[in-house]
Image (cartoon, rainbow, N blue to C red; front, side, top):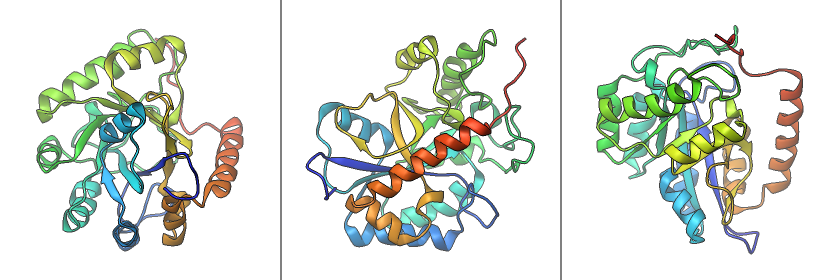
Length: 263
């Protein structure tokens, strides 16, 4: 990216690519406009594992972008993927292993969160064969912050194994549900089982960062194509910094999730 001597890359987080109200939704026309910006700027869309290797190897290339989709919502496979395929682009989808083909009604969801249809295993396997990366978003989308017995084994190890078996892929990347950062023991487990892990901390990826705590920018903050264009060009850092501070303040007042009772 331009605007800094230090190479930086934008990683965008999407959820549903369909009509709806709230930050989880981006309408198909708006998503297509995002892809038009990438094409116009000559940006290269890579998977998160490819980007993490560039961060680790200090080989970030100009105008590199990674598009990620959390939860594995059906509209990603049925609407977003064809739009990307038309442009020869790939992306990464972080799937909730225990809910493939079901709905986003996991126990940690806030009471007002929409329960959206999720893509099934067959759809996701076809997506992987087309060049997409499949990442893990846990077994039941549980944040790694509770003392629940067996939490790490279920959310990190069993979820990875289930995705790999059902989709016949290698799963090397993990996205923290709700962006909730784990304590030291959980972080060690993430490092043991995944080559990279992705937060919701707003910022640009740069060489030298911890590849198990890499930042992303939610598409909600980049809805207008002009904002996405500026982020890729490297001229949006003050705006992103202000958004980062606002998100931190909001989460001190209200969590995005319900903490499951310890069993």
